[in-house]
Image (tube, rainbow, N blue to C red):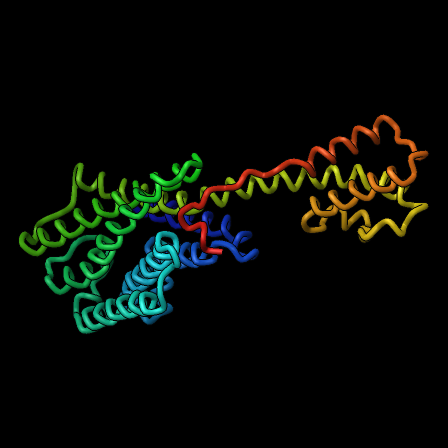
Length: 338
């Protein structure tokens, strides 16, 4: 189980890092926030992290409470993201306040149940389901919140999948539907186990039920974060490939641009870039377009200028790049979070 928890938290942190470039450019920031909070909550569970953090917080399994509180915060953030994606005008201010209020109320209820109990000082509190109704009630606050959200989340993804035509978006939604169904199964097993532990003190989650529980605990969160980050990753790779091609052509066309515009600098509005800037400048496609157009204009005004075969090939490639029309991407779930 510890290996599962470590693998899970690592996968979520990787997904968060993948979303950082988009967030820096003002896109998918709520998704990044969710992934960071979710990663923090799962990181607290492996004993390798749990013990030193709990000692730092003064002991008493306060880290266990922090895990549940962070889970509720993550659910609230994801709820807002789903509202942004599924409502025509996004969530209203009142609905956002309601989401925050419900999350805060659940965390307050958890704090009362947790800090008002004596079971919270139990050694290795997360190892098994305890034979205590107050423990079952405390854990159920998180489980029930997860179940309610999983239903609305799964329905939203299924409805959105019918409207999407882009394959990567449909795959993303399919992964998130799988995650939602997994959460429902996780909640069902957890609630049943908690009740059985109260009714039968010797109850232990073993055999196929434990295997299924462990598998769901690993697969569902990974399906969710992969689904959330898949379109970002695919779009990022496509943008990186385009950026590389534009930058390569910009590097190749620059000597020709300098030579052709050398005698007619008044035709140019493009700024000069040093070799280092050619490698680092943002939006190289914009500079490629300007230099291509200025070369064409200069050749039209001064037809006596000649190009070598290599230069003509480079110019033709640049023209093909600048005339290429990028397909309009369909709207996708969570795509409005920019």
